[in-house]
Image (cartoon, helix red, strand yellow):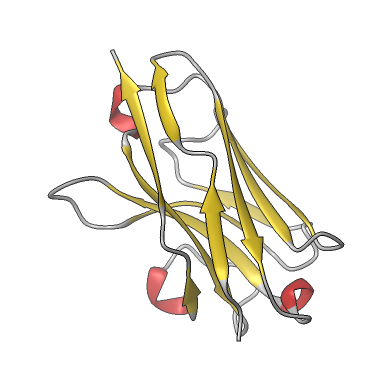
Length: 124
C-alpha cells in the first residue's frame, strides 16, 4: 500500500511558476512508477508527466513539454512537478499516482494509488 499526499498548489498569474510535491508513505516507494495527472472542471482526467522508479525514464504530455519537469527523491519518498511558464489552460486539480506494475505509463488505469489532489489556478 502507498498513500500519497500532494501539496504546493495555489493561485498564480500566467507566466508564473509553481512546484507541486507528492509525499508518499510506504517502504517500497522506490519500486513504484509515479505519474502526475490533472483534471479541469467538466473535463476528463489527463496525463501530465510520469517518471520511472529509477528516475531515468520520463514522459510528458505534449502540452507541458518544455515547461514542466518531473523528478523524484526516493530517499525522501517524494515526487515533484516543477511547473514554469504557466498558462490559464493549466488550471486544474493535479493528482499524483503510483503504479507497481508498469515502468512508465501515461494511462491513468495503470496506476493503483492516487492522492487527493491539489488545486492549481492560473489567472490571465
